[in-house]
Length: 367
Ligand code: ADP
Image (cartoon, rainbow, N blue to C red; front, top):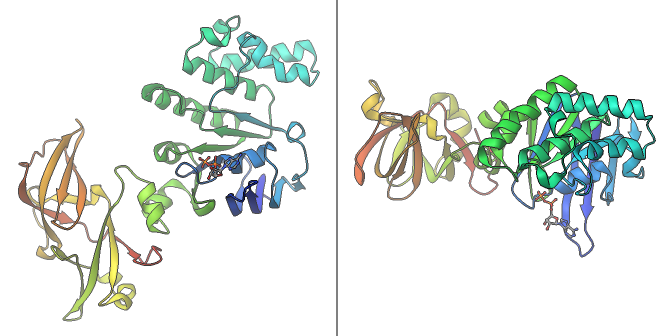
């Protein structure tokens, strides 16, 4: 059985807001699971129910094989790291880290050993006598993590722990938490709205929207095989490009016709796409699957798309082109030295073996 299991867990807040809607999810022993989704999708509420900080309205929550719906937070063997760190301002770093163990009446020598061990891992020993206000954001975050580690819990929960840090520190802490997970080999559940954090840290990712889990899978499966248009748009940066068009059948070949552009669908997709002949559908293509034709020696004419280049954004290692077909805008990610002229038409090549199609009404993935 999974270490943490949610079975049809729901949370309805007083006033009738359904924040979490029948979520079923199993987090394996030692797994790093990321809950990701836009603000308000129910991530924190899910985490807080696991922690025991929020009552579960319906459904079952198991730790190991024990039903814990009614077990108080302090008896759940779970430690949580909060977004705002929640350090005690009047205590030193050492006291903050030791506090939870003191409350649980651990012997003094054991407390000192655990705090020292955790501080060693996190590089905090030199800060032992400082108070939180004398620490940088990153150091406070480390203390908050340290306070969780000393308890040696069964499960760690992280609620957007990096969102108060600047961009550079966020990347650094991301790696540190990743390394910490490898070192401690403990189950971790991590909440974020940041798809990059989800992609880089998660063994698996659960993508949420409107209180519902949309897809649970490893990062590459989510990226390559999103189950619907929402997941496709949420995971990946820049987001996947979408165009609404129609499937046209001509001489037993299928084409996607957007109005201004027309591309041929690869034969492997024909069987599935056939049922959409004459109907509207969303085409999705990631920016890295679009090429400047100038740099492609052989491109079938049916894959070429003409568009106006409106903005060229050089990022150093690559260049983003903001393009417009006259009906749809889209972004291509091209090589660092590609600098097309602005406000001129240019030819692009769609890698049609990489495109996705989504049902216009349900937005579920067609192929
Ligand atoms: P996320 O963490 O994904 O941003 P939350 O779990 O915090 O989302 O919130 C999910 C939904 O529940 C939101 O619509 C939010 O407004 C609502 N909500 C959160 N906390 C409460 C509360 N204490 N009372 C009423 N509604 C709440």
